Structure formats: structure tokens, C-alpha cells
Length: 280
Image 1 (cartoon, rainbow, N blue to C red):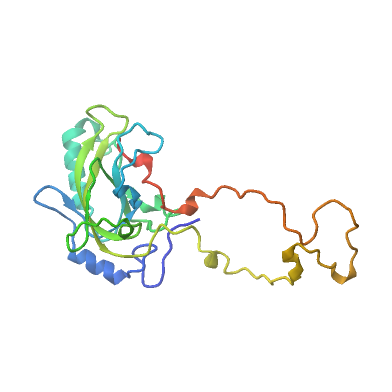
Image 2: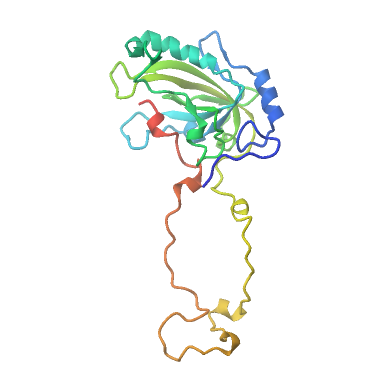
């Protein structure tokens, strides 16, 4: 099963190859901020589940919902989440004042947009336990540009694991009209791809790592077995009687279809963000 792993020189973000120093420098040069238009411009984040950046999709299990563009952002330890929290509490106080519980000093009954990567680190690469991830959606196609501010049309350049800066806007949902889920979300506005990194959409486990302790001696195979010929019995043992039904030694086995693939082995390819975390 795929999951978060670390390699030498990369201790800040799981399944990353850019190195800790690049992450520190890039985040220092691009601090999270709220611009004059009211958008939050993130520090460097890694993208996951990128297929819905180009084509909108309805949440799984709710095909009648409005299709949305979306992406999951994996936040580095240097992104100032207080910028997001200030917007969250400002809007919560304006829209969901009745949901505030003074005894707990928090809002209850609202969806939480801030998620610990530990929730998915056991099955998806790139999710670093202890760091945040957030799902960002939009009804409109977000602009996607490179560092020269030129639009990116080549989908292969926007893949799970790539580094980006994103612009989002905070907004309340679920109160008017009333919906089962209510809360504050951070809608996706635009994306700037800034650096390549390990592609997180590769398969599942690394077989070389999983089976590193295996000790298997290769058998001695009669070449005739590959042609369906019956090899001679070992050590002069008894031969199969002529006409006896059963499986002939060395003959190809009867065909049986393979079992369906484990969906987790596909990692992030062809999937969207967790549907129970998407505001409708």
C-alpha cells in the first residue's frame, strides 16, 4: 500500500526530492499573504489530485451536484496558516454566529477545512503527518500559469507532487440556501506552477523495499517445460500413468482472470479529492 516515506535530505515533506533547503528558501521568498483584492496567496504548496484542475467533476455519489474544478493542496511547515485562520474566524463570526459555543470557545456544527495529513498518509504518497492539507474548489476554471505568468495548457506539467503557489478566497457556504454541510471554504482562483518534484501518481508499494529481506533460490527448470513438455521425474521417481487425468507437470495452467486491482494501488491517478470534504 502506498504511503508517506522520507529519503535522505528530505525530512520536511514526504515523498519529495527537492531537498529541505529548497523548501526553506522558496517559502522564505514567497510568504503567505492576503493581497489588496482580498485573496490569500499561499506560500509554496504541493498539489495532489490534479486531474480536476482542467476538467470539472461532480462529487462521487452525488452526480446531480454541480461539477467543480478542484485540487488538494499539501501545505509545507512554513506556510503561515494564521492568514487562513483569520479569514476563517472573520467569516464564521459574520455568517455563523449562532454556531459559536462560548463554553468551548469554538464554532461547532461547521465543516473543518483544515485537515491533518496523517488522515491520508497511510495510503497516499506526499501526505506528511502533522502538516495540513486543504481541498480547494471552484465552479469556474482557475487560471494556471508558469513562473513567466504564461498560461499552461499542457496537462502533463500539472501533476500530483508538483510545487505551486495558489490564490484562494474564503467564503461561507451551506446557510442560504440551507444545506446539510455548512462552513467556511477557501475557493480556488489561480495556480502558478513553480517547481517539479517526485510524481505522486505512480503505483503502490516499492517492491524492492517491501521484499528486500526475501531470500529465494531460483529453481532448476527444464527448458522443455516452457513448451508444454513433461519433464522427467526427479531422482527416478514414478512417472504419471498414461491416461491419468489431472494437471500434467510442466503444462501451462488453466487460465483464470486476475482479481480486480486494489484501488489504492492507483495512488492519485484518475481520482478526485475526498468527496465527503467537498462543499456542495
